[in-house]
Image (cartoon, rainbow, N blue to C red; front, side):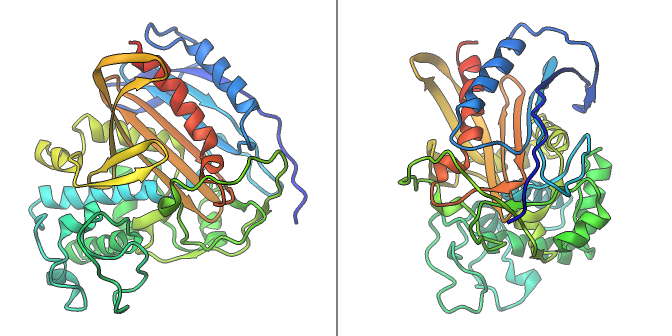
Length: 390
């Protein structure tokens, strides 16, 4: 077990100037915002984190894109991690939102259609009933636990079944229809829209050599398979919280190019917040494709309750938080991610143009999923408290 040295948490609350393009540009002044009590929110979150059931290692970004943007940036790191101003993380299943966007952009360009059979592009080893739309919405019939299509039990019914394999097939589909490597498509998309996206694949250590801002990943004293996700354990929470923890650096993590599509794109919090804002303000997709993306095709059980699922995004409508009642529901688009060494959450509230991005370089034990995402849920709750009364 490596002995860890922790940098002291520095809570930096910076005001950001919202540009028409949706980019996030740092400013040194601390302008106020009428909707969000910036300082009070930061103080509440700091107090809540101090009482959280486990430590926090990573970046928290809360941005109000409509006017002043609030950045709450908390940093700690272990020995051998680079001290960088904008650290990059493997973002886990947040990658699916980017993959879905790339597929829908290809549809907007006339390169394929939602109802196309995937076998037309990837061969007869894929069931004839599997469509592009089915893969995007996890309703293709591919079992959620299937790893390879040659498994005789790979297919079940077309009810919602969360499938990493399905999104890896979408990555292969993008390679086929564009005749370009998926990694290059992701990088080019990032450059086109001023997003700091990285698509290194292979060994994590090699990826860090190519991208010095990419942090090392840590596990909490348990062996977690590199492609294991928390998505099928959203409700499991039967272990008590513990005040002690141990974590060790991930020594070996390998991922293929197609796995970038399901969970291994690398970026920073500000870039992902910008991506969400561009997506939800009509800058990336046609109106028809955006409507298709944000339509519910299946439902999944989640810590937050029953959530809808569109194309690479969870869909929720919130009318009440604690005792505060809201007549008009708050629309919430979200996703979470978990791979060995990294966990993540992203949330966007389109009515207020507010985004939350939380990236960590420690994967906590899946024995208690509420503890794993406890910090993320605390922050979501506090932001919702502000939105519900607006």
